[in-house]
Length: 228
Image (cartoon, rainbow, N blue to C red; front, side, top):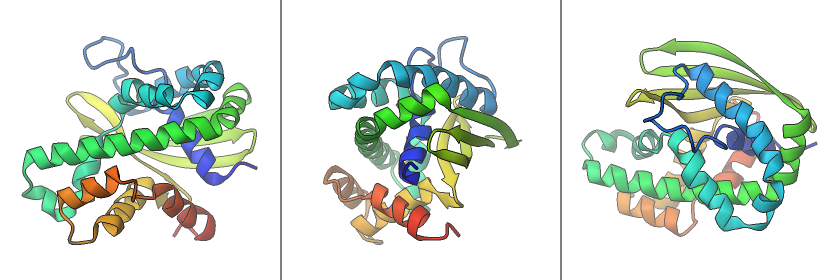
């Protein structure tokens, strides 16, 4: 049985791989939240299997995949504002941009590590697993898509994927499983590392120093906790 963190990571990878050719300027960008998730998941199932050896051996290639293909579908601006809390309302836009960039770099490293560690498991799921999607809600600029993953090492894993529409493009900003939000875990881990009163500089320093241990915090919530 796969570690729940590995399962979640594989799903996150599916949401991002093979989307580098679909940019905001092209005509083939999916127009609905479910279509976005369905499009990238379908493409990724094949891509993971094809790139398994490269991803497992070359960390720089894994980082490049995130920057070129995953990042356009992740709303780091919204993640940065959420991490800052109420202070984001009065923050300098340049500070929000700096934090969003640091968050993206940290997530890139997390993804690269996950791609290397779980490449074989993800490839196995890509070949024999399935992901069923359902639109839960869509209102204004926010939407929720439910994903039910089944396959090798996965016994009906349910995820809630939250998307936000900005600049006429739907992007993922949070994924929940077992009642636990990865965005909340990321925020709490970041604030813990930077200090609750820490400003943008402290948050960026914590991210750059690798002090934000999202994986450990996530595993504690989903494996050792009850997800409530």
